Length: 274
Image 1 (cartoon, rainbow, N blue to C red):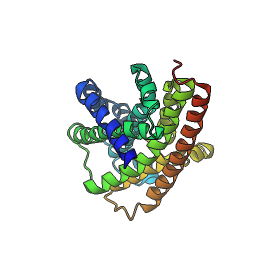
Image 2: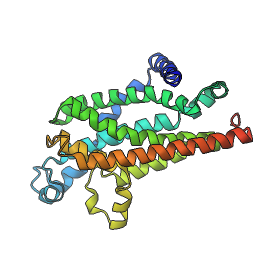
Image 3: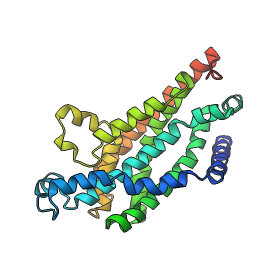
């Protein structure tokens, strides 16, 4: 119960800041509309204006709607990217505001501070998903299948892996005092290897190995099956379970790295170093 109170208190603090400083809303509206456009235009060029040259794409992916294929991939990627960025930079943000040391001397579980900080990130990320779906429907004519509960289940499964990797990135702040480079590397890896705008089967074998080590690859696969083909969760159980297992592994690794680096920082007395 004490740990839950800590998480709720950190979440409440983050919500107050979220409501007070609302500039993030601008990006939340613009990015969903702009980001997938370059992929869609490239696909239009390759498939022909009337889509008559898209036969190979249909044969490889099993999807006739290349636009929807790209939009769902972009939706999941941007959601993962935004969540990783917010989660990974949380401790650095607290450090810049001068509140990290005050939080750290409290007699509480330090990992709960990060989990509490992720509450706002999760809320904002789901707002992003909602806005993205609306914009995709209006601007791109995206027709979605499945129901809201199925969509939520998929994103919750993906979220476990996001929190795991986010924990690793946030832990780096304790040690190297900056996580921007690591976040950029991870988001680049996800962009290239997770199959956002193309099926991973077209990549060389060694790249496919990397792709299949990412939980997001399977999360995107499940999201497309449900949201575009109308598949049930039972029919997508294989990619969902792989996504879940990899996500849990990421979470455990993130937890261990946090414990190790937190102990290292405490022994060195380097928490206050900038």
